View 1 (cartoon, one colour):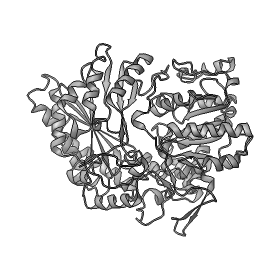
View 2: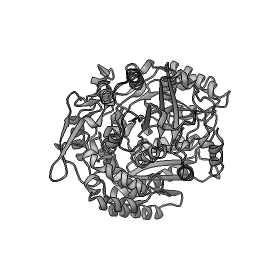
View 3: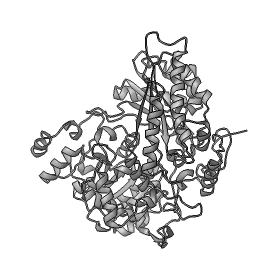
View 4: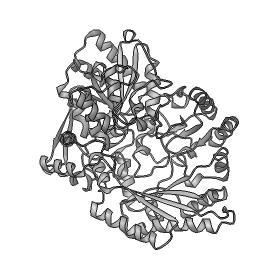
Length: 615
């Protein structure tokens, strides 16, 4: 590491975030590679190093001949300011080379409130922010991740977006860029060829027009651009190899453990959940394959915790055999098993006993709503009896702490539903003290965490407005009073409604928001998802200065026949199905899980056949 960088690192907290050199890092000779890819995560090292997608694609790309994938993260405020003041550009951790020497700079867009960090990283690297200002001299700037299902607010800043699953798509892109380099292909020609790869969306090849009232009028592709752009789907997920090794972080990651992805997608159909729709169809891996991969991963990394990762791990059809296989070797090696996505309705005595052999951690459940009526509206498909049964099993197994996740501001919600959150938490407290198997002399702790509902693209609730700030504040205050009147054993935390408001603006926004994001960044906004860095006043001033009403995006109901900003992007679920699910929600009618009965969402066309064999 050169002396100047060493001197800069001596001025900041946690310099280990910026040094690289971790076990599992990949190093190659610059002279032996024909394509260099910088995988950029627009948040801190600790958060980015928890992201399984980066681990998967880092190994995949580095296994390719002639390709070197390196990592870059958004420096924390002190390091960002230090780099800026010293005129030292943002660099990749492996080589310490500035991002401007890379052929491709790729971001993962996991969260709308990271958008200013994307611009901050480009700026720190000395790369022009807007795609229109970058010619062949600059890296190709691309992005994938869940936020690309409505990439429009960031469209002006990227050359291309990658929709869907990247394990085969991204290597195909890299091979084309290698070919383009060898042939000295003009950037415009390269972009024309890139859009022929399934799931590659080149935003500059589409023209958007607007109606006088601000709604989208038409989305018109240039000659040759696909309409719609259909997401890429991994051809044989069930047999696709899992990562054999991870980069083990030097500074503790938020989720610092071995992770194996047991299934992808979800059968549940919760109407608020974007991931549950954009990752359809649900596919799972064989228990034996997962067990072998988990053992190899723990051997190669030395981790003492193993997470079975998915949107709904307890829906895996072979979960019990998988756990039996893992328990043949994990207890002897003192490896704890973590199942972060347990469902209340299939939580069993067998499951709880198998996941607490080594050590217990707190249990978390997500009822999401406090009344049965509202759970039916959101299609949560769990009952009060199932909540009570799951908590009783936990208390029987020796747990004394349960965390419950809820949302407020859900469509059709009333104050009775808010009171139902407090009622549910109190019922769990009562279950503990009425349980003959409870731990003697130990008090129960029930924590309820309440997020503000954010309507998301590609879900049945994309048509719904978000509650305004005053309404959410009223509901938060009401909930606190309800809890105070019940028990001191219940603690409540809730999200900042202002952050949720901005998230909704960009989740449902269009291309006219790009100047807002750029101007807010220039006004000092970064790390907008962090409470201590969020500058709501700057955002409001920016919207006002540019004459853009953020409430038009967050608080306006969308017509079912409206052209949406993301109408040209296809994630497999038919628009007609989303409209039908919205209408069922308004009637509090439920839809069964996909593995119980097919509801015809359309995602099976991507898989080439039925998702499940159902009677």
